[in-house]
Amino acid sequence: MLGVAQSLPVIAASSWYDDYRTDWLEFPIYRDRVRPVFIHNGYEIDANSVGISSLFAPYDKQTILLAVNTIQTDSTTPTTPTITGGATTWVQVASTAYDVTGSVRGKLTLFRTQANQDSFFDAGAVIDYAAVTQDATMFQLWLLDGEDRSGTNGSAAIVQNATGTAASDFDCTASLASFGNAKNATMAFVAILDETTYPDPIFYSANWDDWYRQSLEYGGIAFSRLVPVHTHANQTAPTMSFTSNALASGMIAFELKKDLINPSADCGEFAVSGYGGYVPAGLSNYSVTPTQLEYRFQT
Image (cartoon, rainbow, N blue to C red):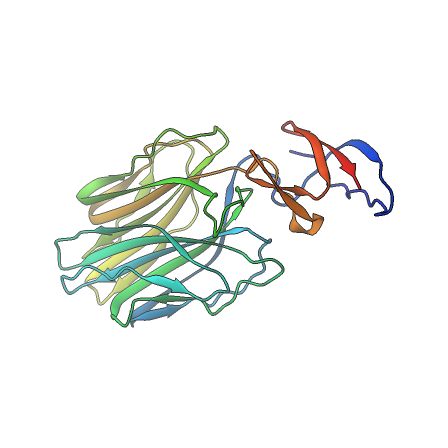
């Protein structure tokens, strides 16, 4: 754990000098690994669009994730949604249909975006199915903490992703490539579907956090769960196990990239080549250890 945050020195703009300091810093985003933060969830029945009624104030450039699980019970594959509004641009990370042959079918889709500077996340974001009514939709909104915030619309935060599906099985697995950094984390969303009951998921891969199991029933013929999981470990083969034989399941797993230097936008920022992140304006000749940041100011 890092020490208590210290204020950065204020230097008169008219003077030019070097100020060498070694301080102990801690911001809300100074963490040893990337951490997801749950924001909001919701659902809708028999709708061709779903509003996301959450209003919060993230840090500038902070990555936002939206997982959407869609269910149809008429032997048609659910429509892949798009996301509009929220004062941001949404990008689809991955989408996978599961139980693609049965009468009850599901589709899991993951989106990413990035917060705008000094603005609230707009409650006007909408999950849009292009006027095609879906039987059921459930969604979860998450915020990342300590991730790489370079790129656009959260593009640097997710290094890679993989999908996996299973039908009439006790397990669902996705396969990721080797991780680029030991400090990068693994996250996954798993959707589970059955016609008679809620399959109980157990993530038996080591060191997984299983925070929340969102459940939704439709008409007594579709029982679905959306489960987010996370681990600080480099997990290349995340596997969800079920206590009962699930009719179908789908998974989107992804590698989250840790940003070693990423203080609050309140300090002023400029991009640093090679780190893919941001540091206070005027910072140069710095070195990073797990507990210290040495910096040199020139103004």
